[in-house]
Image 1 (tube, rainbow, N blue to C red):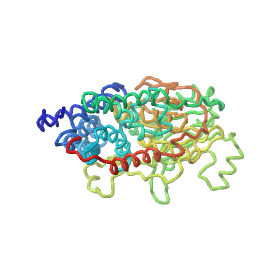
Image 2 (image 1 turned 45 degrees about the horizontal axis):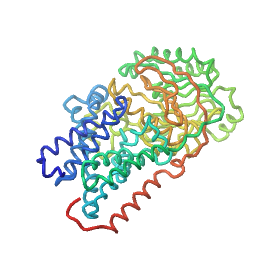
Image 3 (image 1 turned 90 degrees about the horizontal axis):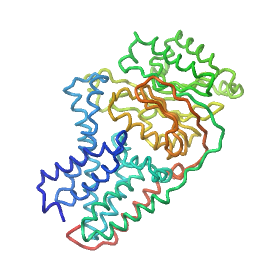
Image 4 (image 1 turned 120 degrees about the horizontal axis):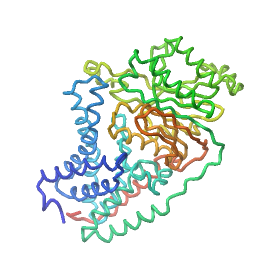
Length: 512
């Protein structure tokens, strides 16, 4: 049954758009994974037409454009853009990001028709989805938002993220969807049935995430729930910082570490010595390690960075402090690492669009960091991931390669309001935990703050949009997962083998 014989082009476009619009509801906070399977199955059926590119483009626009509706109020309220332009932002997102599914399905159809074998598309769509997802994470500075591999989280299959990573695991949901679509096609039914059996076996034999036996450390994640319109308002500065200190002081005697969210100190400490002294006095009285998001000004270059500070109690690890002073570090009691992967149009204006500064004057102008992202304390080697960069598996992998035995994500998702964006962002942190075999300590201004175990499960959290302190334990890890060791290479090798086979061993045919 071929849709080109049943549906006119407008109907193909409309149905593909509906399938794409359903995709965001398969991710957090909805978790209707079955919707993704049905949507991708519908896409598989629809692209077997005369118009695979436009069909795939419509699907992508629905997924990334309509699904990113929350960008409009975000850039209007907090980016200073007028509504007329703000509404165009998610539309532009759909126009650009829709190219990835469009090229993906067009490529698959072309190769399938060239190969001519009935099972070619069944193999090609799932394995080429890996490449499509990888490209999404790299082209145009990368935006792997709602990665298909995240659909495996919360299922036994999620353990495979430690082997193939989030890009590589895109093949499993797509294979399940394509198999479902082909069950309805007589000449494909036996291949589809075999593929479903393979999926079941693959899930059943998922690897076991090892239990860590290192000493436990107690941590307090501070979620102050400061409204976004007050965080950067000088009138509320004293109130906000004192609120953070009060929440922390209640737990300081019971934990080894306190973490404040991204830009908890929303000014340059270098220009505010009084506040710097006040913070030093407060934190010194707690006599524990404190990680807090803040801004840093490099006075020699006038460059600024958004990043993470580590305050060390003076009594802690004296030998280490002396060593740092000898190496010329900034301060024995306060380390800093900056954000590496900045948000385009949010934290900087691309050099090829200088005119945008006139439209969005409130867009920040940060410099990407070149450090290794590691903050060293006697209790842990903290790998820092600041907000947006937690979306990128390569960033977490680099932190672990530099020596991180626990990952720390600090974020401020108040930008997204009560939209599903914050939950979609949170899923990325769960994937980073499984990929690296590390605990992830995630502190958000309004949430979602949580302690995430190496198997991706949330061990401690608090309600979203509430003022709270999440206390719990974590363990350091020196585990090297297969993904950590090999990265995306195994997935690329498998795709390369498949492509070589499809191109060399083909059967001429005019039909799929």
